[in-house]
Image (cartoon, rainbow, N blue to C red; front, side, top):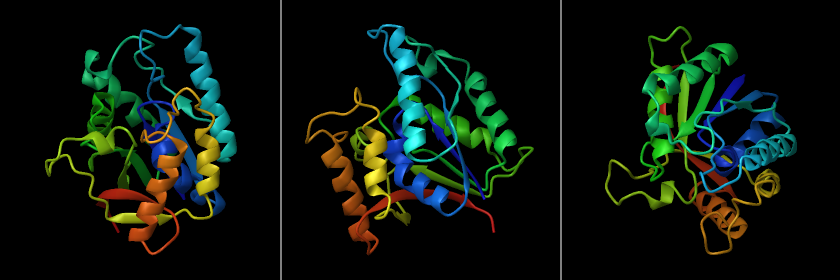
Length: 222
């Protein structure tokens, strides 16, 4: 089975799908990741971009997944909303046709991060039913410090209806996250290692297991 993860920034793929990625790999699936931008602001030096790339490559090695595809959208000082929407859709569409995923993971539409919102919208456009390649299953993942910061209105709420048991893979997810040392914060920040572990245990409690990742099912064609 082919699996594709669309992430706006480096570390989003680990925060949202790190344990599930490891499980897919363990079960013999081919997993591919597309990272849309470097996730850095203009306050960073250009060489930080290369560090972000190295971080993502190291994380992918820990998760035993294929090297990410780096789109490089925006450089270090442009947001997604500064680009024509088609320029964001096109690379996602190209990689869907390239990898032909059975399952596609992307950001949740209610995230407080604008880049995440645009990535979700672009993914849904690229994976529309009338596209050259039909993606049968689409799931939205949460990104701690963004999904949990959404306004308290129903259209933004992350209400998962799919849970993946990652109790065997939680330590691997945490180890992969350590590759992004500049993105990790001290507890109780949502991107602290303690919070990431705690959130996995919360979802596990809801799914009758010790640790889980949660998703919103957008589409499934059987």
